[in-house]
Image (cartoon, each protein chain N blue to C red):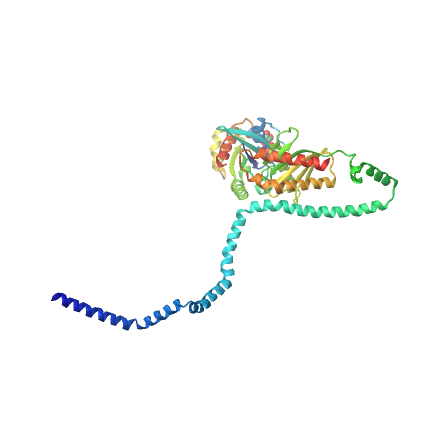
Length: 163
Length: 283
Ligand SMILES: Nc1nc2c(ncn2[C@@H]2O[C@H](COP(=O)(O)OP(=O)(O)OP(=O)(O)O)[C@@H](O)[C@H]2O)c(=O)[nH]1
Ligand SMILES: [Mg+2]
């Protein structure tokens, strides 16, 4: 079985830990406990009879990604860059952030995730898309699990294909 | 009639042509003749050619460094770059061993000085210890340490340095998910190393209750050894030396294996090596 390091990053409070908990434990909490340091856990995802062990790193959010120690990103096969759809300030730096990440690990996959979709009214989504500096690959809700499984199975199959 | 006429004309033409050629090529003929002479005569040939050859060789000698060094350097550089990873992984344990040796040597010197001081102090306690150690045939310092918990290797892991992905592990008892332990250890390592902003310095030990996790860093991977009990400085050194031996002997070959059984093979080797080492060092 192949093992891959995947890291959740983005500004603080966007829902990285919530996505982590939803993916690993299928749980959600409304409480906001900001992450200090790093947390790592694992889940095995099966895609067409092939297993990928995803080692998911949840780190403390930073407004700008150049504040995150590079060593966290090294060796990652994929980066999940999370923004909070409800707080445009969290995707303000998306472009420079992504450039920065691509520089550190050029060969890594990057997924841009718009989280907290449950808080967005359906007719506001198009407006939101038009003001985003980079397009989101997927919209999720860590709260009710929308697209969380999809996000990780898409990622897993791309990781398998890249392997 | 016509035939002879033609023939005569032809003869005349041939004759004229030959004559003309003789006139035109007179000088060349002479040189060709001379050349033939030189070619036939080995000594003369050598005499003529060797200065030219010598000159060319000299020229090459002078120019070689300039003209070819660049090309050679480029080739060497490229080769080095291509195998940089391997070279570094190869050098790391050797370097570590050299440094270790030096440090151990320094320690022994200090210890010797202390021993000298101690032996000059004739205390009753010291005397008792000496007698005891004579009877049981063990070293004083070891006797001092014997009351303390015996060290025990609980877990050994080899972990890829950046990703925290587990290459192999050995333990005598089943533990919670080793992949997660390896990932967390790597994360903690990164966190601590970053938090203290000490470049070139790396986390070497984590203490947790009665557990100590020793970390020995190599370039692209690191060892983590979880121990219970107490370790003397010399035991710690021996453990470290044992890691170096393993790295030197096995690692490159193990890591270059890309087979499906890689993890199992590395784990098996770890088990063999470290539980054997444990018996030698700590008993
Ligand atoms: N409604 C809603 N709330 C969410 C969602 N995801 C996270 N939250 C809430 O947003 C807050 C922050 O979530 P966290 O997961 O802790 O955010 P984080 O990105 O880990 O934050 P840091 O660790 O500080 O960087 C919490 O109160 C969560 O309950 C979501 O999809 N929908
Ligand atoms: Mg968090």
